[in-house]
Length: 370
Image (cartoon, rainbow, N blue to C red; front, side, top):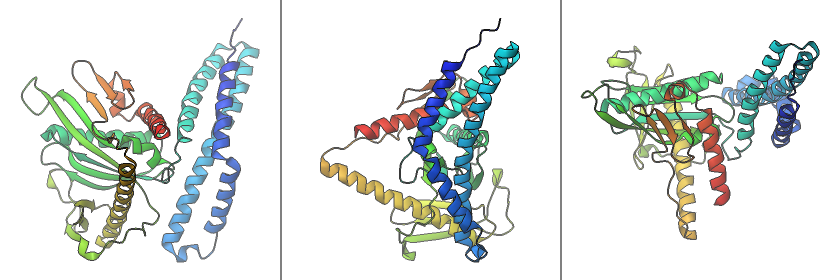
């Protein structure tokens, strides 16, 4: 006699999913998709290429959000049918399939529940991620490349489109820096908790034998802005350098000097782009990222000033937010949330949803306390 009664598990999943749907407001989402579909179907849409791209991108994101909801709803319905079949036929294989599906749905719904906590001004935007090596020589540049692969594998796991915008290779191992865009709904809100200083401790493969090396890499995450008109950048405030794109070891990639580096002289912010085919396109892409960084910097300064005037100054949480230990006790630990994993290999292979979820919940509690 097969004893299989996951009704309480399914009831809990249904309850959580119902709360999520209420927050998401499916009716409003469907109305937004209908409006954007009408705009996308206009015969003169592509007369204005920039507007057309914004409309089609927004439509794609909203459709992706709705599909995620409808897919979960369908899976919950199918799960109940599968459980009923397993019990009627006393089929252990079907019961095992149902148990596996319950575990997967708990994970998917849990991720979606965390997403409902993303209510910041730009949280629903795509993200531009920049990774820079810090102190630690070859270990640091190697670590920066490990982090880049980690985030690219995370995006691949979620089937999120990625565009690498710029990569600066180190003379030895790894990369000095890299910038890439992850084009997905809520990519910024999700990955923004990854911003900060990451620390790696391991036996160095580049130095003396059995010598432990600590190295650092910085992760920056900014939203993809549809427009950044709030920031006016005078031509005299920037220096534009043109250079030839290069791969590992300095190997030439482009036949023309199409890569662009823009330095904002008052702040020292540097943005490089080499993904596009022409110098004009790379300059435009670099200016968009620079405008976004300046806009966010302006808002951070305003927020800091308000806190100072109010007499409450809180320390930044960005420095050394996570440590990766690859010697002795293998461990990856988030220093803000306490979330840790005892096997670093899956983490470096993109399995970081647990860290992200813990970070989002931690930030939400911190914001509520403030």
